[in-house]
Amino acid sequence: MNIAESSAVASRLTWFKSSYSGTEGGDCVEVAAAGEVVHVRDSKAVAGPVVRVSRAAWAGFLQGA
Image 1 (spheres, rainbow, N blue to C red):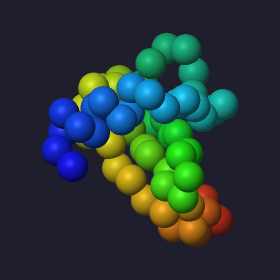
Image 2 (cartoon, helix red, strand yellow):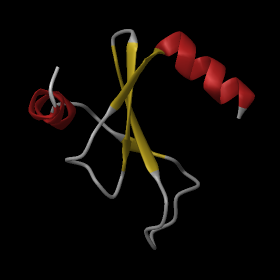
Image 3 (spheres, rainbow, N blue to C red):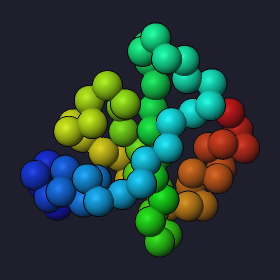
Image 4 (cartoon, rainbow, N blue to C red):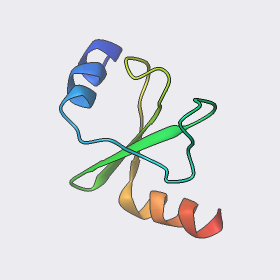
């Protein structure tokens, strides 16, 4: 999948920003779950790259965070 394809897929997802993110901007990530994949992106660069990980990997990351 190239960046253009990734952007097209990302635009169809429902993204969620952390409740810890303020309204002033700053360093934030957004996530969107689709099937067995969790998509992660920089909220300031919505047309930029998207990292895709399995739900199991995302759950492990959250457990360790």
